[in-house]
Every structure is written in C-alpha cells, then in structure tokens.
Image (cartoon, rainbow, N blue to C red; front, side, top):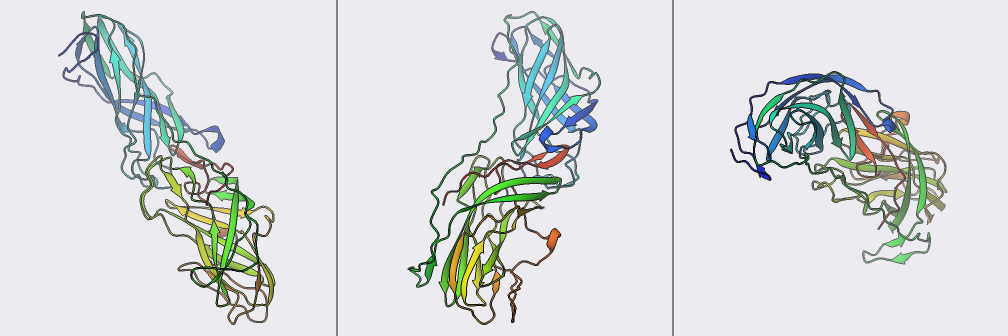
Length: 413
C-alpha cells in the first residue's frame, strides 16, 4: 500500500456485503408522474486498510436499481448516467460524491435498469474506523434527472481501518455532471411566391412562406404543447408538384447517443382552395448514429401533390408524425396557422393524390374529398412529433417516462 498525502492508495479492496435499502424515486415535477418506491441493492468497495493522508478510490456497484425501465420506451445504448452520494462516518464524517460514465447496454421496456459503476476519491483525514454507506442517487437520461433517496437508515457497506500517516485534510472529490445544451438559430422569413422560376432539372420552383404552427400534442403520458415554424416549397413537374417541407437543418444538440434508423418524421399537408384534401410527406430515418452533443439533423419531408381541379390551391402545414425509439406522439394544429404556399394549378387525371416514399395514395372522382398518403385513422393516427428530433426538451426518466415540450427554435435552412 502506498501512503502519504495526495497518493492514491493501492491496497486490496475490502470484502463488502451487499447492502439493500428502501428507496423512493421522484421524477421531475413537470412530468406529473407519481413517485416510485423500490429497493436499491448496492456493493461498495474500498481498501480494507489505509493511512491518514491517503487518497482512496471508492466504487459503488449497482446490483439492483430501485425501479425498472417503464413499459414506454426502449433506452438506447449509452444513454443513462448515474451519480450519487456515499455517507462517510466514524473517524471522519461527510459525504463522498460519486458518478458513473454514460455507459449502458440497450435497456428494453419493462426490464431492469443497467447502471454503470460509480466512483469517487476520498482523502482520509483521521485515524480509526471509517465507514461508508450508499445513499441517494440520480439517474440522468436525455438531460433530465430522476432522484432517488433512502427511506430508511442504510447500514455501512465498508469499514476502513485507518492508521496514522502523513496527515493532511481534504474533501471528497468527483467530476461534476454536465448536460448538453440546445443551440437555437434564426432564419429570415421568406416571401411566398406563385411566380414560376426555372430549375436545373427543368421543373418550375415555388417558394413558400414560413408560418408558425401551434400544436396540441398527445404523448404516451399526457397532453403537451409545442410551436414550430414550417415552410412548404414545391417544384412543378408535368402538372404535378414535388413538395418539400422544411424544418431546418438542426434544432438541438443530441442529449444522448441515438442509434441509426431510430427517428422518422412525417406530416399531412392540408390542401385547400381549388382542391380539398391532404398530401402525405415524410423524411428518411437517420442514416447514422447521432453522438451525444452532436447536432440532430432534421431531413426535409417530401411527397407529391397532383391537383384534381383548375384554380388556386393552398398548402398549409397539418398534423405531424415522428416515430422514435418505439414511441409515437400526436401533434395537431390548435388553429389555422395560415397558408405557406399558393399554387395556380391545372387539374390532372387521377388527382388529387399524395404520398411520401412508400406511402399510399388516393384519388378523387367528381368530388373534392380525397385521401392522402397516410391512412386516415382519426384520433389514433400516427401523426406526432418526437422531441428527440423536433422538440428541444423531450426526456426519458427512470421510474417513469415523460415528454416535455418547449417552444421550437427558429429553423435554419
């Protein structure tokens, strides 16, 4: 064993029995979720003997967290980070801050939480028996903490025999937890245009106006709200129109590692004026994994609108769908956001039709009512918005999952 102030002790770890204690976990107040009661089981290891002035490493290993991952969403790999406090008593007293890395296997719904080992460094300041007992802890997932505290006295897990040594005083140390921050951006509002302009591909382009859409969102755990600027552009090709809905290139930094092919947005664009109906547009899933702290790139949503009647047709943002990590949230405009784009159209055989890649399409005969590329399922449709891609502030919590929606930043194109 090495001793002396500022030297990390390298003695054999003490043999510690597993400590189990009743625990109450509390989601953030904004979630509206109840507290969760459970049992925490932990092993705490530290050197069996050391000297005054030694700095020793203390390790807290979870053998059981107080609650399971709720039956709402699969937690991706490396998305959960624990931190906690160990009570120091006996010859010296205080608390030792410990934390673990954001390292975990994928955690399916309704399964045991898998938390990384937490570590901290304790400087010994007095001779005698020093005891260590696990205490409260926090689980950070998607930038939000769920806190867990003991509801009974927790027995000591380790006793360290501390002998006279080099002396000195110190305090427990640990690296503070940091959370990613979102970076809002702004773009100037564009002026809608019905005047054709040539494109490199030979089509005719039409630029829409950015409009703010207020959404009422139905999440797996309750109703939320969100505001988003949306812009619809179109390119005319042979009487039909290729639509592009812009949400900007990045609205937030990723709060955690997101696997590839896990985020997919879609929308129903409302058609009015000369035509009445909906056109489905959708974007691809994220091709590559997104690392924590990297910008989340929102792809353009695309689909095709084929008019059925002559005249001026209007295009307005409608219901949104984003599926991510096995969950769906439905967001419907609470009021008419206004027209983003107006087109002078000529009716085509088979119009109105609409559909994104892989979507279905519908046709109208002598009436103006149509179906778009997504099935019209009413209150149970897939239209939604998942904050991992579109709303800064979606979070997942141990002991209960909660989606919180905050106003969207202005979008960058």
